[in-house]
Length: 339
Image 1 (tube, rainbow, N blue to C red):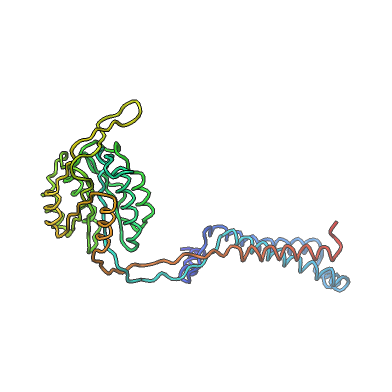
Image 2 (spheres, one colour):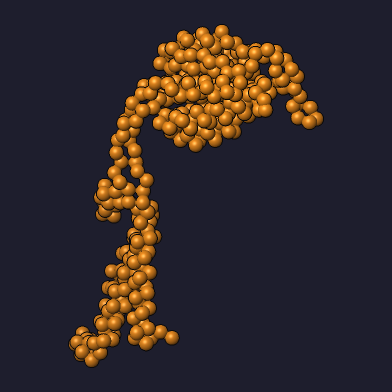
């Protein structure tokens, strides 16, 4: 480790850092300039004449000395400003309450059914899930989208803005159509198992019947329970008849009124086998109540290392450089050398 690396490491221990530490190398130019100037003066005049010159023109010599000092201060401060200094308080551990939650969101074409007027199921579910995300400030959240297959959109993270953006971007047609509930459970449970949290929850939101995928939902639920994952399932949709998309015409999707089918029995078994619960949301208000109830899940205390935001200090040396340059200009004006 070089002396430069040692210095920056020591400053880092004090909470002081640099965004571009290589700029500090410009400070090495200052002693080189001083050495070069002294050598040039010595070559131009014998040393015996220097005291005589200083005695003859003390004011001029003092002004020159101050000009050199101000210029050195300006260059040094400018180099420090370019290195982008900042200060950061020491990271500290905090006790927080939170759990790991993966949201498994159904994006099959049936989510476009318009039985939640004036919006379809997808838009209502999207709105409520975003509100749920907003309330879970201390949790790590992940997102799995599923239809005829399942795909992780966001792994477990504390970046809730990222999860919210991913939810906003979910649309039917991004995956093969169908409803693979077992595959969704397996994918989400695997994410929770790998995360290593002590409290793991899967919120499964769907509006259909399992009709795709190679994994049986009950088998997937038993495996999830073995990993310590609790499943809270939400069935989204009315009972009876509802307008559902059946194809695409000249003016967009074509809708027909057809029977709505949600496998309440399967979803109830899946949830209960893991110690969770099944909720049926038949309208937008019911879905809001469901997400509120899930929001009141038990919480687990965990220790999180928090790093405070840094404070940039580059304006301080930049101000020193400006003051030094203005001082140099003032001296030149006072000496009468400015035009």
